[in-house]
Length: 181
Image 1 (cartoon, rainbow, N blue to C red):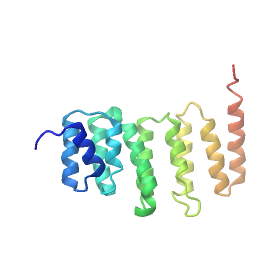
Image 2 (image 1 turned 180 degrees about the vertical axis):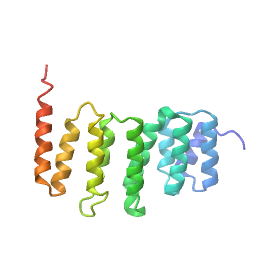
Image 3 (image 1 turned 45 degrees about the vertical axis):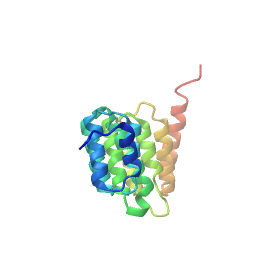
């Protein structure tokens, strides 16, 4: 296989439809030690790839470049979130939000992004799962106010006004902890 330039890799990631052609470009990127997450985002948004193929690429990328693992997992979660209605991928969405949280458990963005994918009309992902995920995040996230607010909203959507008020109050208390200077 001839060595591919970065532009050729970029072009294949964004518009190639043949898996082998995309795979060859991926291997060329890894062999070239290219750690540019923007390049791999093109790969993740290639709509000719199946969820299994995206997982294959994402897992390999996170393994080869551990410093990119959080971004890789967050991007895969977001890709699956946007496409789950077509492919019923909300389970993959949650799987990759969990993986991102395992890499950076103190990153509030992971938990907030996961709760953003809740679709009330369909109750997907299951609201109880999201609530538990956010509660796990409370153990690690330093600035808990955002998670308290989101828990309040989720409990309200789920019809538990008592828990909603409890977390709303905790959020309000948390906001008073950091007076402006």
